[in-house]
Image (tube, rainbow, N blue to C red; front, side, top):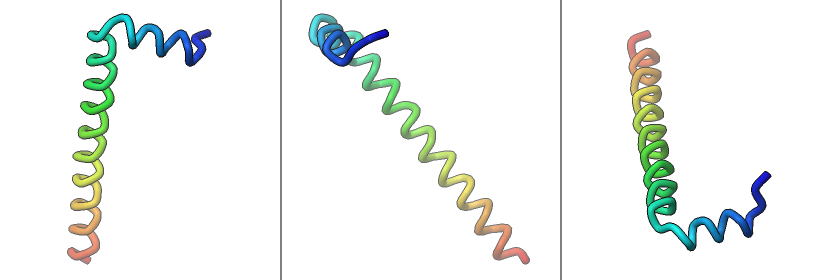
Length: 50
């Protein structure tokens, strides 16, 4: 099991791991925001239709 200090050391030693972690977080965060917008738009369209 990783401790927080080991994880910090890995990020300090290898910059590509840091870029990969930040990039992965940004990708899934933006993907989630897009899906949230799609779900809200479909939901409000359904309420407006009725």
